[in-house]
Image 1: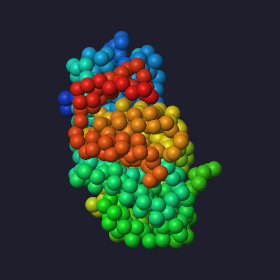
Image 2: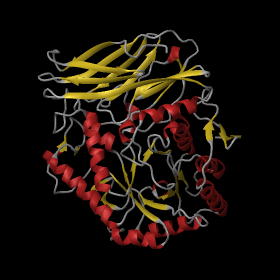
Image 3: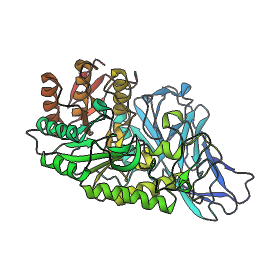
Image 4: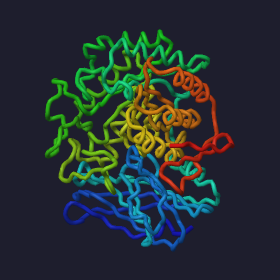
Amino acid sequence: MIFDIKSFTSKIICEGENRDTFIETQANDNELVLFITAAADKPKFIELHWDTEPWEGALILGDAWERSYGNLHFLPLSENDRWMPWYFIATDKIKSFCFGVKTGCNSFVSFRYDAEGITALVDVRNGGSGVHLGGRRLCLATFICSEYNSEDVIGCLRDYCGKLCENPILPKERIYGGNNWYYAYGKSSYEQIISDARLQVELASGTDNKPFQVIDDCWQKKKCAGPWLPNKKFRNMKKLAEEIKEAGARPGIWVRLLCNKDRRLKRSFKIKRKGRRTYLDPTHPEVKKFIRSDIERIRDWGYELIKHDFSTADLFGDFGGNLTCTITNIDSWHFYDKTKTNAEIVLDFYRLVKEAAGDMIIIGCNTVSHLSAGMVHIYRTGDDTSGKEWERTRDYGVNTLAFRMAQNEKFYMCDADCVGIQKDNIPWEKNGQWLHLLSYSNTPLFVSCCNAIGEKERADLKKAYKVFNEPHSIKPVDIFDTKIPSLWEIDGERVRYEW
């Protein structure tokens, strides 16, 4: 081990002076459990530092707060000046070690590993302010360090991810099918969704596993916001779900639970930030009731999958790609309930969604990755791909598939996002490669297309759906050379993609 997990220095940062905040730890082998207690104080951060032995030639890969944004890659230790949320792996391609925190923790934890050693910044704030613990003793995180001797670095990381998550929830069958966003971009209708569902059933012919037809942002009264009731083009959402099932597909639906313009919601139920829009505060009892009723209504309509989106940005004021070592860059604000950390608040919100969803499949998009484990069946690991720009699909889709696929089936099922097909936009020789890779990836496969696709696309999609419904062995090979791996090992053979 290059460092002793039990030997560290610590620093506590509060609003004002530290009067009664203190931390405790419990150590066991390669684990360290961190606790905090505070009565009058309002703690904000805990900083832990471990001195490490020099490791020349080490390469470092970290994770992301929520989705990644095409920026995951290995960096030499000498150049690694970034903060890495949740965990990281360090390797010289022969031996490796991983260091991070278990999923479902009650704080936001990021790491920095450089020539000075390893620093963990534990964010315990409520909003952008210190948390009012009121004397409560809170378990903040369980740190785990593991060493490996193997040239299969992704395999080592996959094993480590299994140690971080004790309670993943996984769908009983492979999840695939249509999502209308990347060909329609919000322009759709009841009739178009039925046509899309029938197309998915045709493409999946010969497989026993029914495809989904997911209705993305387009069906509700307000653009990208509630109330979660149908607009004039969609009319009757329960009847639509029934017709999707009659066509032979499974109905799914998109929502943005924390952005709602329903007049029944009072302004006092919302998070207010200077210079920013207002969003629902999930710590308010009335908001909790409202969110639960929205989800239960959708479930009662007959939808079998719910994709909830935007909640990290709606909670904390920005997307993960713009954040560094902390979950929010906005100071001096708090939630209605000031007594819980941001991580506790996020977990409570996810539990509410999970309970209200019942037996629906849950997809988390723009949810917090480490806190989504055990709360969602499927997790969108990267920012949006595209039906218009190939470079966006390549940079975001391939990157997140390669560098976060170690989490697949260990935290949740990893969704690297759709194959977006718009006529005459992205050459099929490019998009077809993305489809091919996803079909072998053992991760969810969603395709965004309508009946206007050509015969070549149609034939390739039918083949991909058959391939997808069987298990495969896959890993990226050139992970140390590029952000966009082009060389992959699939079922024992090497395949090179021309991205």
